[in-house]
Image (tube, rainbow, N blue to C red; front, side):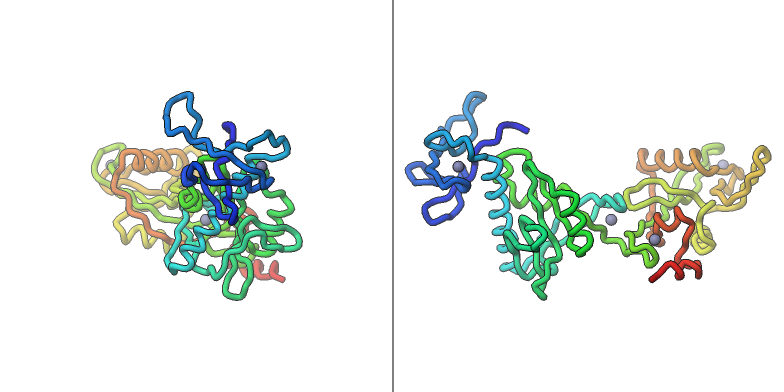
Length: 329
Ligand SMILES: [Zn+2]
Ligand SMILES: [Zn+2]
Ligand SMILES: [Zn+2]
Ligand SMILES: [Zn+2]
């Protein structure tokens, strides 16, 4: 992290000013220690000139610019959320989901009825608490300059179904990027996919991709089908499709039949070329074909087929298995 400067200060009324919005000749105070700050804004640009900032009149060894940045950002972020709330317009944000790898979009104002700073949950105080119409907290925004929320706070949020939205600040310039930073949080502990009935984990989205490609043997056009996750990662081929999915792929013009390996004796369903009969075998062959299709931007059509729980399938538990119901309380 670069040296953090003071880019936020308040006037005698407590109103916040950034170093860019502040004017010379006015009186400013430190948001941490309340001492007088001097605005340093030369108007010059160049490698030797520092960006506009405030400085204490006399040295304050116990006052940290990181604390001022944290305070300034969360206050201005809460103001920004309130502006959207009052205007009654959506405020979208995006995150890369750590549960399903997909890019999700959320809307801050969908359930939002009020924004609170220093909301006391007894156990912890989120930087910004988002409350719904029942005055219940449904999301906590944590602004991280130096301290990440502790493991026990994360667990508390998880247990109480509070969505953690974490924004990491890297520079004092982030004070000018309130909206942008809110739009792209560094971490959102939430997935939009439905949860598993059995184990309560978020399910994975399984998308069937049908590629308009060419046979690697005879070069005639052929379609092949593969399953991928929401992050475009290859999962498997027809060998693991359900009977409905096989029928579905065939209806879309994909040729699938049983492959029989003379060497290993393996038998499974695979994509094949209807012209010359060559198979695209499972594992690496199909996976390579699939990534090639992505790289070469071959026509790929996606069909969302189903959700599946990875935790349960690892343990070979299926939603359809009757005995899985025994696991429920
Ligand atoms: Zn200070
Ligand atoms: Zn997700
Ligand atoms: Zn499950
Ligand atoms: Zn062929």
